[in-house]
Image (cartoon, rainbow, N blue to C red; front, top):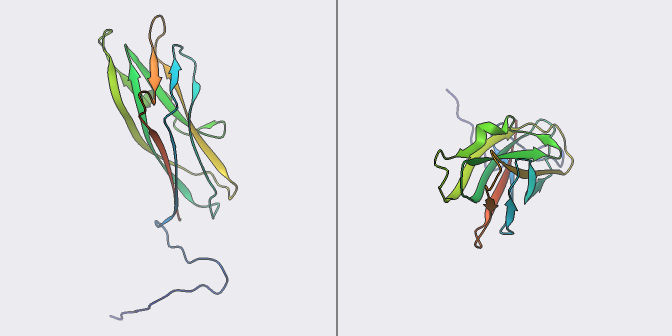
Length: 156
């Protein structure tokens, strides 16, 4: 068995040496601007982040921590790359209560992997919609709570 020990790996060109599975870069978007809705139509929440992948083969690991408050039934959040929904169906990512009199607050957290196949600046954003209307209210990022969208480029 042989052992190879080096202090530094340097490519023949100005490019970086990236091995599969390593994090290349991390960017984070945040907002505490209140988003309110009383509709079942998806609307932009004001939470977004932009990343410029270094390779078309890179994957983007998307981590969402969206603050919420709603008073009955439920809501769903979807993540979009530009206008493309990357977590369809968004209903899989729903916060729901069977008690119509709840006043629920907290953070909706989940993680996704996307393959944008580009080296252009790429913006991800969240949209939210209620599962029912008629007197139902949804508030995101309320009372000075922040929401976060973290993007990590993973080398392939």
